[in-house]
Structure formats: structure tokens, C-alpha cells
Length: 336
Image 1 (tube, rainbow, N blue to C red):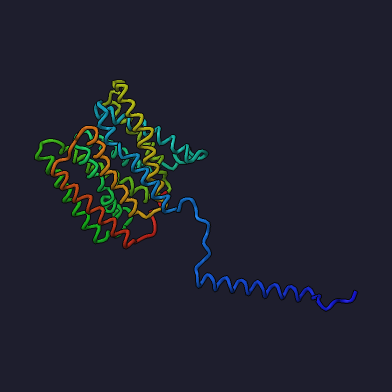
Image 2 (image 1 turned 180 degrees about the vertical axis):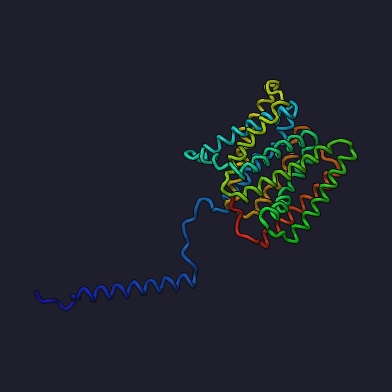
């Protein structure tokens, strides 16, 4: 067969296609250089927005915790027993929901150093309930908001992390604010023991958070679940579990199976997507919303010392957080 004038050999066609592809790639690169990369199809939620929504939802869900504690009329030892036991069961449900085929493996991580986390969360629970039943909700939550600063001091020992000058200044100012709050309780001859218990609670919670970072292979959810069971067993001799009224038990169920486990789970998951500073800023909402819920139901108004001390504490924490957002030291707050 005689080849026509318009026919090409195969190697000529391949060479021509390679030239066309090279020119197309070059044009695309020039376009991206001039106009930026091609826009991608937007997702429903960006990871950052997802982290904000998850963390904020956790704060909103757990914010009525103080109100529910106030609505329960039983003694604080019985309340601690049922709260701890139900939270243990609630966290077990959350673990099975998040890790349907690996729930037991999560509990197996709670051994050795993980027992330190269990002890910290157990003592934190006891301190929190004692504080909120012996002083105002505003005092308790404002003092507990200082937990990140306690964590900074503990991390200096456990993780050998350097404490920045702004954090040291914040610690001193928060200490002044807590002192103002405690002074008001001492003058009023009521609530001082509750304020001291809140300080202990903040310390133990900070220990728990620091242990999570120090021992990342230990499941925090499983540690909280185990601590609830151990706490219930510890306070059982002092409690009267069968003396709880139907209304009190309803509040306990709401607290132990919904508010605490779901709120805690969301506040642990959300920080995987957003910086630690933003997490701290969102968690300050609990210190504001918690007293608001109690005021709406019981008309419990904070005293002048609580307002002044709370303003010092919350404004210091907010400014410290905003500064961390403006000058970040590390990329994210990814926690297991």
C-alpha cells in the first residue's frame, strides 16, 4: 500500500502528542502562577470550622452541669456516688460508639502510668462536687477556668516545657483574681471551703490533662470511665444510694449519661482540628454560661468579690489566649 501525503509514521504522532502535552502543562503552570490554583469543589465543612463547632457544642452541652448539681437535693457523697457511676457507664457507651470493635483495647491501655490519670480524674470529680455544693457556681467555674495555667506549671515538671513570660504573668494575675474571690467568701463566712475545693479540683484536672499529654498511648475516655467506677466504690461507705428521690435520679441520669460524657467527648475530639489557644477561648464560655443558667433558675447572684475576681481571671485568660492566637508557638492541639 502506497502511503498518502497526509499520513504520518507512529513515532511522529507520538512526538507530536508529547509536544502538545508539554505545551498544555506549561500553559497550566503559567495560569496557576498568574491566577492561582484552580478552585476546588468546596466541602460541607472545613476542618477548622468542624473543630470550632464540635468544641463549642461540647462546651454548651456541659455548661448546665453546675445547674444540674444544684438541682439535686441529696447529700454530696450520694451525689458523687451516682454521678461517678453513671459517668463511668456513659463513657463506656461513648467508647463503644467511637470504637465499636476496639472498646476493650481502649481499657487495656489504662495500666501503669494510666492509673495516674484515673486517680487525677477521681480526685477532680470529688473536689468539683464538693466545691459546687459548698460555694457558688460562679466561684467554682471561675476558679476551675484556671486549669490551663495549672497545667502549664505541671507540664514544666512532667514534660520539661518552658513557661513563657506571658504565661507567668497570667498565672500571677489569675492568682490575684482567685484571692479576691476567696477573700469575699472568707468575709462572708461561707463558701471558703468550697473555693479551696475548687482550687484542688482545678489542680487535679490539670494533672489529668498533663498526664494525657505525657502518656499519649493511654485512652483518656477509658481512664475517665475507670475513674468513675473507682470513685463510686471509694465513696460508697459514705453514701446512701437508695435514698435518692425520683426527681434527683432523673437529674443524675441526665448528668451522667448525656451532659458529662457527650460534652467531654466533644471537647476531646474538637481540639484535633483547631489550635489549643482557640480551645481555651471556647472553654471560657462555660465559666460564663454556667452561672447564667443557675441565675435563671435560682436567681443566685454573684457577690462583688466574685465579679471583680472573675473579671480579673477571665479577662487575663482571654487576653493570654488571644495573644497565643496572634503569636502561635505550635500548629495545633492534636490530642489522642
